[in-house]
Length: 114
Image 1 (cartoon, rainbow, N blue to C red):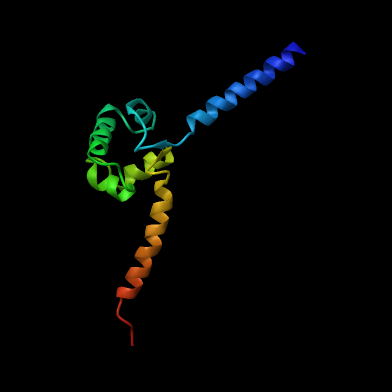
Image 2: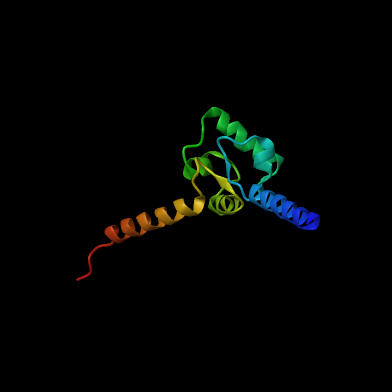
């Protein structure tokens, strides 16, 4: 009986740690340690992110990419996959939405073939 309780307790603790490891980190709310918990973000990048955030919160992923040196679409995607969000939004959602808009715009821009 004691071993069953111990096993259940250990399983519960392991589950809680796993959930914490995959918890989203919002760029506008996170402290430096939380930002550095994201794979690919070290002390230099977290400092740049916080310095820009002090000027004004990030509106969206595009705003963050534009304002922070060293962050492009590739890094944004990697950071998002590792758990970073901007106002609760992942980069993948933004990228898919933008791709659809870009396709629609480029389709409108092409001259009609005769």
